[in-house]
Length: 295
Image 1 (cartoon, rainbow, N blue to C red):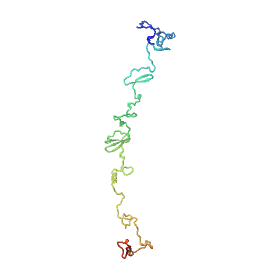
Image 2 (spheres, helix red, strand yellow; image 1 turned 135 degrees about the horizontal axis):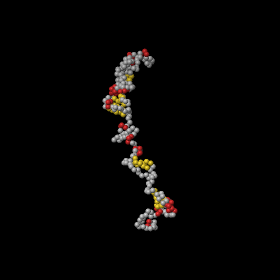
Image 3 (cartoon, rainbow, N blue to C red; image 1 turned 30 degrees about the vertical axis):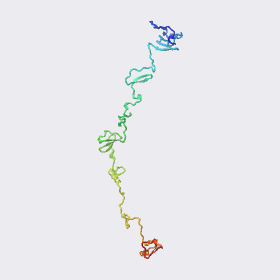
Image 4 (cartoon, one colour; image 1 turned 180 degrees about the vertical axis):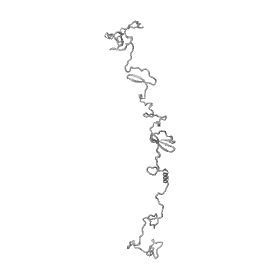
């Protein structure tokens, strides 16, 4: 149903009521009992507002019961969680932080609030390393290692107080030092030259030995060539011939029917006896009285 179709007195210009009373007597009662009486006499409708002087409260009928709209002379804002207003104050850079349930406060965020590392811990002990302009950790913030070698023009240029784990080199003497905690202690002086297991071999001798090894030469124990002598009997002589065949006297040689000694005359006689040759075996020379058959 539209508003125009509803029944009632139509007033085009409205009422001009000049009285200390409401136009609708239901809208103001003295007690809550009078308010509830409106329900019992069926004088309420959903949305009807009734002000009770006794409680100084405005009520509205919701169709089933009365809802309290206000109490006292004006509107009272709810005071529970979620109804708190933003607190006054606050400065630039501050944020609204939770103070308690449904209550906030202005405050400045700390590194701990956002899980960040405090700036005071940057580049400090038990803190975090920083980065230089090249994006690398500065050497001063890196741990010291035993192979850190620092070179200076001379010992006088060394820092007044050194660091453990570092080696300091004086370039003018090429000596090396370490920091004992109170003074610089030379570590290069402990090098002793010698030819034992606990010493260092001199460099000049080492170079001589190396140069010698690069040139072809006979072994150190090699001996000069010596002409052997068959008649040398001194076994310590380089000319002595070892394991040479031995000679024996004729009397020590055993003879038999097929093995006999011959004299020089017998040998010459035997060599001069005539020989018999065939044409295919004819030699260039032959003993006198030799016979040759030409077949």
